[in-house]
Image (cartoon, rainbow, N blue to C red; front, side, top):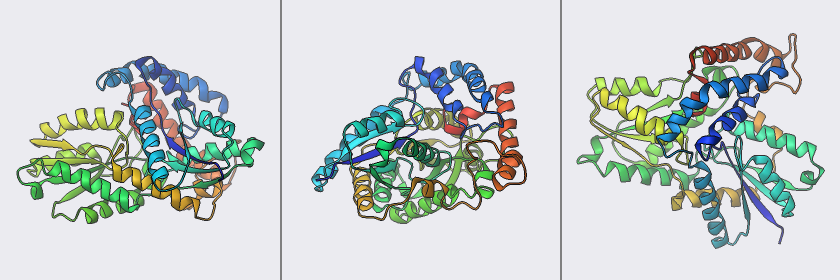
Length: 387
C-alpha cells in the first residue's frame, strides 16, 4: 500500500512563558501579517513589536497556566484521527505543522519526507477559510513544494475549508446542547456565536470568503441544533483604526445585556481547540464584560478538541480527499478571490492590480495599524487572539 500522511495545520502557540517573545517575533516576521514596502524593515519591526508586547502577553498566558495548550490538544487530535482512520481501514501517519511555533510546518514537512510518504492530505484545523489563516499556510507550503525536488515526488490533496461537514456540525450541536441543559429553561437561553474577526477590507476588497463561510456555518449549526433559541453572531479580536467585521463581540454583549438577556451560552465558532482566545479572551475578558452588562448566567461551549464526532469529521474529510481530484496549492489559496490578495515575491510599484491593492489601501492601512501598535501598545496581537 502507498504510504499516506495527513498534515494538520494550525497557528501554534508558546508552550511556556519564555517562548512568548520568540513566538511573537515569528508571528510579526511573517509578511502575510504585516506587509511592508521594504523587506529589510520586516525583522527589525517584528523585534520591536515583540519586545513591546511580550510582558503583557505573558501576563495573559499566566492566567491560563503559563502557556498555550494548543500543541498538546492538536497532537491529541492527531492521535485520535490516526486511530479513527485505522478503524475505517485507512493507515496513515499524522503530522502537525504549526505556522509560528514548534512543531513548525517546515519540521513536519521534513519528517514526512524522511518517512517516505507518497501521498499527503493537507488538512487545516480552521473550519472556515481565511487568507490570514489557511491561506498563509497554503502559500508557505506552495513555496516549500516549489523549492524541494524531494517534495515534488509526493502527491498531495488539499482541503480548503470544511465548515459544512455534517459530523462537525453535529459535534457542535451536541456541545451546545450540553451547555444549554445546564440552565433551568434551556429554550430561553441566548446562543452567542463568537468568531475570530478579520479586517473588513479582506472581505470587501480582497474577496476573502471567511465572513460568508462563518455565516453559513452558524446557520447550519442552528439548523442541526433544531431548537427555538435566539442567536447572535459577532466577531472578536478587532484592532486599531482599521474597520473589522461587525458586530463586534464586546458591543454585541453590551447590547444583549441592555435588552435584558440574562442567560447566555457563547459558542467559539471558528476555533476547534482551546487556546488563548477561548480560555482568556472569552472566559475571562468577555465574561467580565457580560456580567457588567447585566448578563447573569454566562457559559461557554467547549472547543471540539477530541470530541468523537469531530474526530470522525476529520477522518471523513481525509478519506473523501483521497478519492477527490487534486488541486494545486496555488489554486487553493487564490480561489474565490475577486482580486489578487497576496503580493508578489518582490514589491511592485505602478498601476498593477496587486500594486493598487497593496501599495494603496491595504498597505497603508496595515502601516497605520502598525504605528498604532507601536504608539499605544494595543492592537495587532488581537488580530490573532494573542492578548
